[in-house]
Image 1 (cartoon, rainbow over the protein chains, first blue to last red):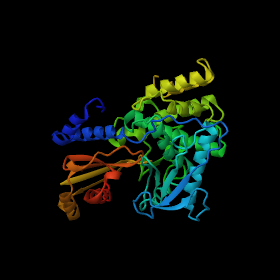
Image 2: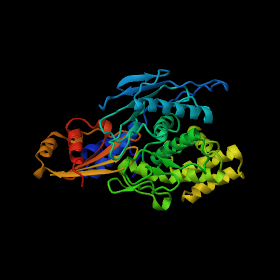
Image 3: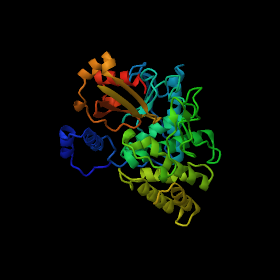
Length: 342
Length: 84
């Protein structure tokens, strides 16, 4: 349910006075989304870097020492030697790979395109099964060791979280419903591309999995999501079955998880996979360029839906390669393949 | 009173559910007395944070992890420790 045109004072009223608890909850959620529009976003244009400038990362790794505190104690800064704590050093290295990817592939200087320092807190909480971007930094749990390993392990998890920061500074896709699923999807898309770039995999060679290595030994699953075959990543008695759809026919309507942002992201994820394999070669070069320019180009709305995002990618592909180019046809057919009418 | 908690969201997007009843759970009864679902702030929009849907006898609220403090935090973790 969307009610973005309802003025905030009316929502406040519903939150406090409505008799129906479900209605109160919807109003509260909508208010939260409105408030979130005021979150940090770069409003001044970024000075374009000189074509030869070598971008340099600025990493800080902090240790929460198994408490749920942020940012925690700094344990490794930029250029400092390895600490010997594999979690700390892995987080540091993956931030470096992610930074280098965006410089090499798209000439982007960090999260905000202006060299923003990257901060990660590790050892967050106890048996903590999550990683997130809190608007300013990345946060990683060590996992419980039974279902999940440490979230610092897979490179694409770091890529995914850092790209939430890039999205915040660019398209700022609202983290709810279809725009929220697109926000999730672009984090998966670039998370996967960073891993492919790091491994030197073409679209055909890549596994297109998200979070491979995150599920502990004994869990029946290969990863958390599959961009190639959404819904097939895991099926385990303790975790349930991967709920992702790969086509609009199976779109899941739910209010939980901000309107199913981690579920319906399977649809645009698969569209990206289809475009990448149809174009062939290194996915970050052409399909990735189209998605990157769409995300950062300033043409999509913060509450863009799948159809609007699809139309924007086709417009970008047309601008880059021409209306009749194979690349543009591949993007059009990819969206048609998941049932999104651009 | 029946208390249900559903955790959604998180990087993994995997739901977790718990349920208990104050009639057979004295710790829960004391926690329920100390929480006010009407005073919970909106969940905010933090990518990949956990969201908690809390239902106390039909009275519901959604809480973001960043706002989960005090007795409500104790209640959520207590109930999630009793999977359905």
